[in-house]
Length: 189
Image 1 (cartoon, helix red, strand yellow):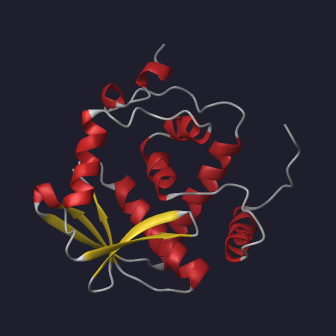
Image 2: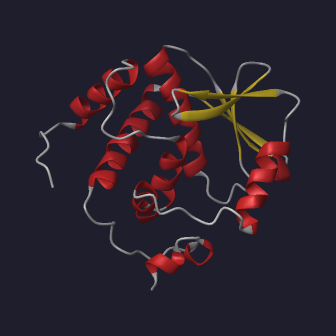
């Protein structure tokens, strides 16, 4: 393993922002919205994904989520991919929308949406509000980037870099949703 310079969290995030703003400087880790979600669901899952160990995307759970995302609010939103890093939907009123099948896990999709708002604000200087939508539950939640939520996003980004740069996966930890995780065969061999 190569020796990396010792950064404080603030230095690391400042470096990440500077590299993301400069098209000629690659960040140490290309952080996506899915990585933010995985970090808050299971850091071990994030580590597997960062190593190119991908899940079977033809499973019913994945297909149900994809179908819900693709068919909900399609008349009132437009999709954008920004910097090859984030893929987001913007509603006709300008809010950034994240669509999920279920609200059973609240924090991961909220942090994913907050990362999109943080990325737009800190990297491109665009302030937006967010909407977290659960069409099957007929509910929506407004999500705003504040100083406190921005700090939470930056702590998440710092944590993601730690997980991805680690030589081994985080320790195995049994969680209530492990049985439905598509990486369970790898974890529990």
